[in-house]
Length: 620
Ligand SMILES: Nc1ncnc2c1ncn2[C@@H]1O[C@H](COP(=O)(O)OP(=O)(O)OP(=O)(O)O)[C@@H](O)[C@H]1O
Image (cartoon, rainbow, N blue to C red; front, side, top):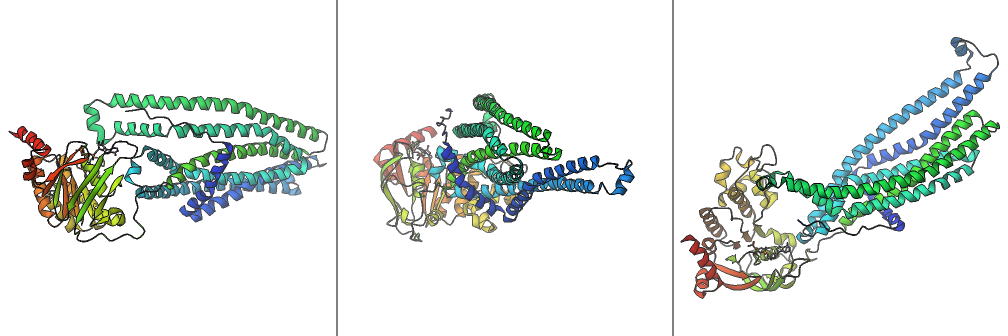
């Protein structure tokens, strides 16, 4: 297992980071699309909350001034009841009640706000995940096999549960901004230059924060592959699919050590950055604190000289401290939002990946029945990112209604031919015709609906037995008769009848009620998918390898009988099965070696005869 290569960290300039803020608009639309009422609720609550702090502080100032004024009155009452009776306490009491109401209101709004945000967050994560799944479904096989696309998907996936955070930050900042304006309005009345002092004191912290956010993003970005590898190791070490082999080979220690190694590496990089960040930021924040105490001294002095009341002193000192904190959080928050918006790049950039294999604008109908067949004209194919030709100069015809077997050694190109037939890939050179027209001229979905392929590495769905067959044609999953018939055709019916819940039996060990099947039983289930499909071309790409010789013979005999009138292709390494085909195409290193019936090919005494003889000897 090779260590993932590290991409150079993309440290973005301040401008680029600001540029990422362009995603805030589309993000807002995503959030709004998730739930308009909740979005309105969160904005409304934040608006009200933004004005509460200054109101509370100002009422506090009024209380202090009122208490000092009342205490200084000559000949005030001695007892509590006399105080109340005199009416002198009325205003103080009213003010205290008002502040109490504000405090209760603030608490309630804060709880209500988190509740709304939490619900919105869950809904957002679900709806964005669904969008990601929908978009992933449009991508080509080639793109899935590309590790760069996998990285982007992983980064986008992270955003499905973090994305709302950015929106929350933006809302939070608007809230902070309004609070700041309300506090600043108070300060401007008393001492405007204090605001300038505040700003100057905060700039260094802001710049520092912005710088470290960029470093942090670059670090996370460059570690995407490692994160995927860690996830892979964790899963391989502890999943039902791998448990058997991991135990037999005793791979646990190896996997855990590899996991520890790679996470240590990530941990060290994160720690180094965290230490640098906190150290530097500590110093820069101290500058802001110095600014605050300078202002505090000034306000205290003005109070001593009688220009400010004690109430003013508490209001101003309070305002100033809160304003300092708020400005710092606004500036830092702004820089962090800009950096977080970079992560949104990952989300939105995934949505910009588009498939390369599409239907044409005016597709032709897939002929029914197919009259001529599929013709390969000098087809060559290189897998993306490779120089090697997996197949080249392939020219042959798969006639309508015939059963063609593909034979060749491992890596000869058999599966590649099947993938090209189903347009999972496009030929790099040459073309494939269906009834005289390039495959690219047909509607992609209609073409795929007409091609039923069961691959050697078919998927073992953790679904019921019936559903495992129905996936062959998922919109007919309610058609029980069709499922049962497909199972009978693929010889799976007998095995399903023995399952405790027959067709409704969950299969696979992933969930508690699941029953595990043998390899051959899984294959019979998978082959039934081909019969479920109303496809004109049926392909069995070696899904029978785990069947015993008799079972494979029966499956193929049945396959041939049932595909009468249909075009079919089968791939097998067993010549007893291959010889049943009408014609056999022998492949050698991606090119056609020979083609003919079993008898013709034997008579030619070429590669086919040689391979056949080799296998026959094994049975003597
Ligand atoms: N996704 C892929 N990316 C790059 N190369 C691939 C990919 N799939 C197959 N190849 C290469 O293409 C060649 C042909 O592979 P293919 O799977 O068609 O062989 P095959 O005849 O079906 O072999 P087998 O009998 O082992 O199933 C092989 O050399 C293989 O390494």
